[in-house]
Length: 214
Image 1: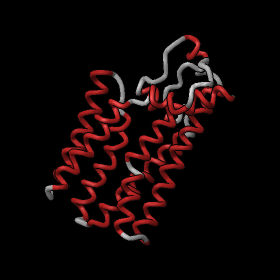
Image 2: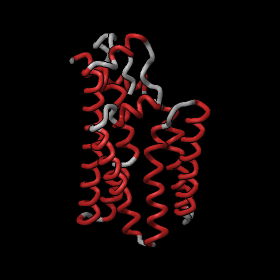
Image 3: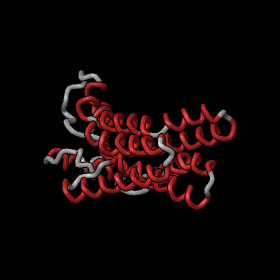
């Protein structure tokens, strides 16, 4: 989501830009550690305890990042709803089928949220980019923010996030209903943090690429 350096040369490979700007530390703290916590407890037959601790970790990361550093850990923000849905749904329904369906519910809710945000002046991905303080503050950028090209990059990017989440929800539902459990679990894992990492990586690369060609 680094919409910086619009004037940069177009010769830099996209993967180098992602490698340079991707928030690796935030990814490890906000995404990998909660997953490790959950699976360690799940390994010892205490998945609910693991989910509670992972959710608490995520909330703590969001609060500390916001109040101490005045930023947002996007990975933790996006992961918390899924964890809470899993915990609440499992406690209320006591159904393993509902637990497996929580990923599809989470993707659908985020997809709808991204779509709805397109009706507002600042699409949701732009709001999150500002919250992460990933857009540089300069007089040139402040002027550029007022242009149609600036907003359209975030509209397209938010639409990509919406489409990816809604499509993921559909794939998960189909996989859970008609595919073997082992295959569904692979799909569920692939469409969680790996997909999120890919979307965020794209988000750091896409705005500058779009503006250079607008």
